[in-house]
Length: 129
Length: 64
Image 1 (cartoon, rainbow over the protein chains, first blue to last red):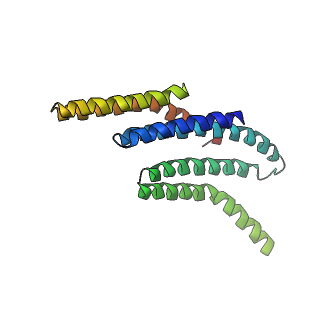
Image 2: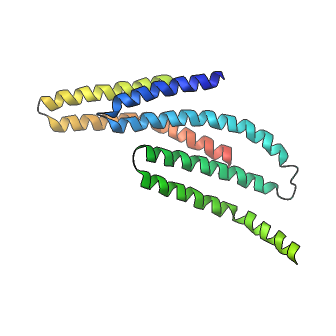
Image 3: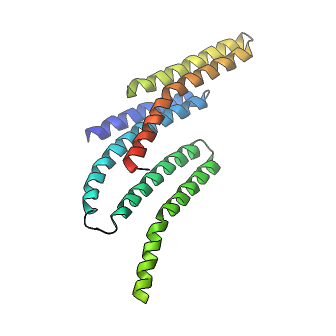
């Protein structure tokens, strides 16, 4: 809870300064917003680290398909990063670039998910035969 | 380190705005532009290590 308060406090201070600079120096505000995003992201990643340690215990249950857990984690990372970048781009009015980054993230996820798809197809083929 | 970086960026922003206005009113327009460019690069140099740290953490955490 304390971590949340520190983050919120810092974020509100940063937003006030970003608004202060918005009128005549908008290019400096992007660094401020970027720094705030990074600060929050580091907290998110710390929490995700603890979640990951718990979840990796489940990996032992799916013996044959333990590799897919790693792919899942990779997908989460890709989604998070592309959403972060797309959000910042949209904040500054460049929604076209933001959409492109989102589509890029989705494509990367599809590429990573191809082995899983192949395994499912093989299982289905086995069942249907 | 985190908190005072925000104050530093805000301070640089305000300083540059004031300097720019002073230079503009005293007729030297291009100096004002150069000053704001310098401030931009200065703040960029502060932010880049943080961006690098974020990307390294993400790369190591998600094994990308």
